[in-house]
Image 1 (cartoon, chains in turn blue, green):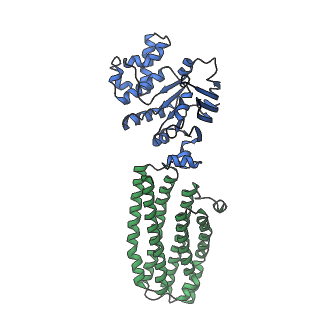
Image 2 (cartoon, chains in turn green, orange):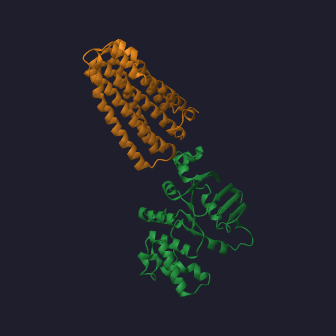
Image 3 (cartoon, chains in turn blue, brown):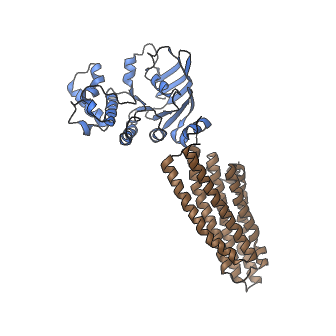
Amino acid sequence: MAKLDAEKVNVYYGDHHIIKDVNLSIQENTVTAFIGPSGCGKSTFLRLLNRMNDYIENFKKTGDILIDGGDIYDKKVRVEDLRKRVGMVFQKPNPFPKSIYENVVYGLRIQGIKDKSKLDAVVENSLKKVALWGEVKDKLQQSALALSGGQQQRLCIARTLAVEPTIILMDEPASALDPISSAKIEDLISELKENFTIIIVTHNMQQASRVSDKTAFFYLGELVEFGDTDQIFTKPVKELTQNYITGRFG
Amino acid sequence: MTLLEVELQKMKSEIISMWDLVISQLNKAQQSLVSFDKDIALEVIANEKRVNGMELKIDRDGESIIALFNPVAIDLRFVLAMLKINYNLERTGDIAKGIAKCIVNSDQPFDEKLLHDTQILIMFEEATDMLEDVLESFRNEDTKIARTIFKRDKFLDEINKKIDLNVAEYIRANPTNIEQSLYIHSSIRKIERAGDQAKNIAEEIIFYVEAKVLKHTSKKNIEE
């Protein structure tokens, strides 16, 4: 069974038909890249997966999105619970104006967990998973805002990991970072794949080809082509995909 | 046109120039064989340095395009195919030079009967035509033409297979002309390899245009 299934998904913002009849199936422990020009619907589709669009005015969705076989838009599903299972990392690092330690445990504290030894263990594990532990272990009580951009982004990923999601959504997670920090995030993505299912939106073709197993190309709200990344970047089936990835567009 | 497209166009022009030069090298080698004009043969030998220079330039350009532009899909296949075609053309240039050397080393015009019996001129003609046709296939991205090359390479292979017998027979009848016979024997082997190079180039054109790999596939699959 697929980790995530989208079946005939349509999204409307008022009269605007943003996502058109998208069917997509994502397997567990894979990295899937969503690519496409600005306004093609890839970020909207990504935000559907943890119901971030719910509060947008005039938002309407048809079709089903299933995670582990369950409809995430079912009335019985609590959005808070869903977001524990589906974490998100944004384009711009957004640490809270708190200590490094408090950033990591933020989600756990909301869940009511107070056991210090448990929180300490989660902080260490999460920071180790994002390869940040060695850099910050002696200054956990310092402000997260004092970290570099790349460190802040890894901290945000650690904060996401702390609540033990199974899917991580990343919306251009490295676009605001320098090449070295960006490379660290890419390395991290391939390591995290062992334990998580990752979906990443990126405008950087080379990044998509380096980090992902599968690539989905969106254009004007439609899923034009979805396949193995290797196939998409060497012999795409659709001419539109070829024109986009080779830069001959419009 | 994107910057990458400009670079790819430049590379295409460069490889066509090299291709034209290599075709001219084969034509001149054949011409000097028939007319026993050593000046033409020496020109072929001298021009080989130009072919080598072009090969190095195209190799460098291919390396730069991959490093600087990260081509993908058809653009990547184009660059990869160009690098291989570049190698095949250079090898064909070597073949023309090798034949020209035989002509320079020979001390008398080649016996017409030897040329006729070994079918070397027919082979020469066919190998050069094949190289011209793959060039046309490349210019027009026409893989139908490229697919005709495989059968024609077989034709060269067939003549090549008979070469030991044909030359041995000629030597028995003309025992004083052994040296020339060996030159022709060696040249026919070389021309057969020129056919192989044209076939390799045809495979690369099909790979670049259709994303199909035909190396080591059966004849039936190739012609489909």
